[in-house]
Structures are given as structure tokens and as C-alpha cells.
Length: 168
Image (tube, rainbow, N blue to C red; front, top):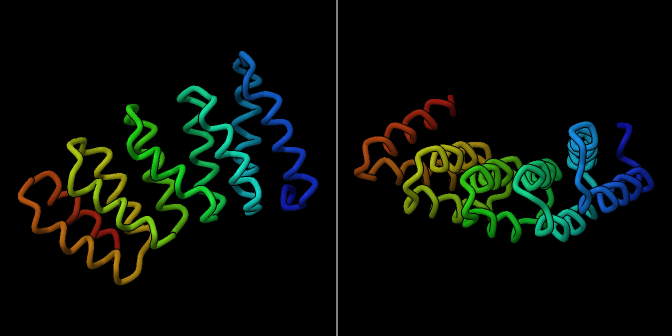
């Protein structure tokens, strides 16, 4: 892959660091999105720390791209940041964090995602969390989804049944 070398990842992170605090044109923002995608696909877990450091200094649009890159990295190093993002005031950021946790396929995320399903009011966020639980997979995920069937809320039950259907 083009961006798998250490030098490439370092160069991409340097580029992001230079671009992040600027007022970007649409063209420059598109380039940054592509670079973040490349960082996410690099599999280089060193990038997780750098992404965690810059996520606090950006607007929500760029934050969504960084969260996606973190999910694509598949590292545990950024899970604390994603957990914090589950409580963000912006629903799109919360939903992106839930999806990124699913992309990570890390069972440590299951309890956080389950707490969203049990305690949140926004169905799109609950749906994203349920799909992430399915993405993580395993017997613990299946058991979590089974427990959600006991929730009285009809909409959450419907989302849960749809997620169970996607397992087959």
C-alpha cells in the first residue's frame, strides 16, 4: 500500500499538523480529508496519538474525518478519545464515534456502546451503536443485543431486531 511506510505516515501527520489550524479553502479541506483517510488506512498506530492531540483543536466537520481515521486505524490507543466523543454535544460527532468503535472491532467498546443503547434518547445514535456492536461481533456482542430485546421502547426493539437480522 502506498501509505504504509513509516516515512509516509510521518509526512502525512506533519502535513495534517500544518493544515489543521488554518482557514482552509474547500480544495484544501478535501486534500486534508484524503490525507486523513490515508492515515486511517495506514494501520500505523503511532498516528493515533497525533490524531488524539489534534481532535480537540478542530471544528466538527474535521472532527468527523479524524474520528473516521481513528476507527480505520484499528488501534486501542485512541479508544479513550472515542469514549469521550460519545458524550459530545453534536449528534453527528457522537454517531461517528460509535461507528469508529465498531470499525475498531475491539470488545472493550461493547460496554460503552451498550450504555448508549440503554440510556440514550436519539434513535440514530442508538442505531449506530447497535450496528457497531454487530460489527465488533462475538458472543458477548450477541448476548448484549439479546438483552436489548427486553427494552420496552418499541423503536429500540425494532432497531435491535434489524441488527440481529444483519448477523445472518
